[in-house]
Image (cartoon, rainbow, N blue to C red; front, side, top):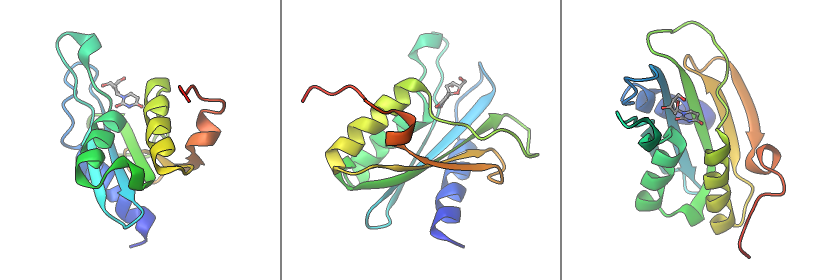
Length: 140
Ligand code: THU
């Protein structure tokens, strides 16, 4: 299994542990360090809808604890409706998550590679945070 496949598989596993009873749209994310460590997260919804947390932000929080965001190298995000295992559309990080990934990229002083996938992991789109969010906001 390639490194990319391993990362996508970790995101798929995390997706299955999402808490998304309101949208029924399950998203998983796996963040990889420059040393090959992986931290995962999934979307975590709330009955007060606006308090829901995206998979990417959940995984970035876990990555900060596991190895520190200054070591981030790449991440995979997989998503799709609950119970659908056939090929679908690759999920790209929402605008807020792009800004959160930029925060990590700045700590690591690198462009973060992003593998966007459907739930089955077969539909893939590879990009980077600089491509997804050019001219991003920063305080420095
Ligand atoms: N979601 C994510 O977890 N990541 C994204 O980048 C896009 C959207 C979640 C939020 C919500 O729980 C569900 O997908 C439907 O929007």
